[in-house]
Image (cartoon, rainbow, N blue to C red):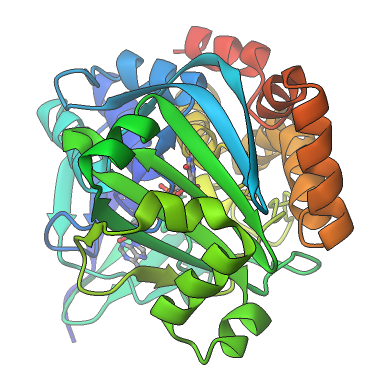
Length: 384
Ligand SMILES: Cc1cc2nc3c(=O)[nH]c(=O)nc-3n(C[C@H](O)[C@H](O)[C@H](O)COP(=O)(O)OP(=O)(O)OC[C@H]3O[C@@H](n4cnc5c(N)ncnc54)[C@H](O)[C@@H]3O)c2cc1C
């Protein structure tokens, strides 16, 4: 039996939520250990669209998106059937692959004094009167006074989320492509959202002129094409011809697309009297916003900051943090979930598209209503 190691603060997960909390705690002189299961940088399923709120948090943490090569996105183009419509975004968005972004934030955390343990997966979490214990395969178990749980979409045994009532029959896919020159020029400066039967897709440029195609489709829709990625793309292109126009002749940069199953869209953690006060759930462990117009990365960054500043000001006040986070994201989560539900149906897709075509400003409003509100971001930044 390995000896137990004691730590004051442990963060599980080195995505945006965990790494941002690590930065803020380290800046305040609080030693913390971040455990990340991936031994090295990797791609993650994500549209890689950075809203203005996400950019604000990243800049505050010292990240320079220009230096990292992020693309610039100022317009949104919506495609449905054979038609498209477009509008200006209410802010300048950026596109950057998660492989680069997450590593840059982890480097920030290290440079500020956080200790990072990589290539180690936390297998189980158990709570008792003296602290929160973490079991990790062959490494010595850890007893933590305070735990920031930021393992994203992946639940850890002993601390699983309860996503009852969420819409979880969707599968997310992502692939990077090198587009033909004319197609790349046409995509430049735009995020393209394509509606199709059974799901929706987002296409935009990230660093180096690479195009990121990220889509969600119902499990039934994927079963219907025999679980084949190529046939899924053909079917989407039949339904929404814009995808074929954009990807015809494009070179896939991944051997196969990345995927994620059963995304619990609409999940929002409720403070739970059964959970220890020293447990803070961050990012997708606290809230999962539909990715259609959603703002998951800014919620992850917001939650990382809010959890760290709540802990610094109030100690083990997990319930207070979860209450505040709920208040901050509930509205955008509701709007995104309603929109996500609407576009599942032909009549809903039709209605959303025609509303946006008749009134392009609607797209600006939708992208505003589905993001973390400015007042919450301002309050979180002031709390530092
Ligand atoms: C299809 C799709 C498209 C999306 N598009 C966008 C978009 O365009 N813009 C946007 O803002 N948001 C988007 N999102 C949402 C966004 O990707 C997430 O909300 C965000 O990544 C959550 O960050 P996180 O830090 O909570 O989790 P993650 O980024 O998932 O990080 C969790 C980390 O924990 C590690 N980990 C997991 N389990 C363990 C363990 N047991 N032990 C140790 N480490 C562990 C993982 O390796 C990972 O590095 C999208 C989501 C989906 C599904």
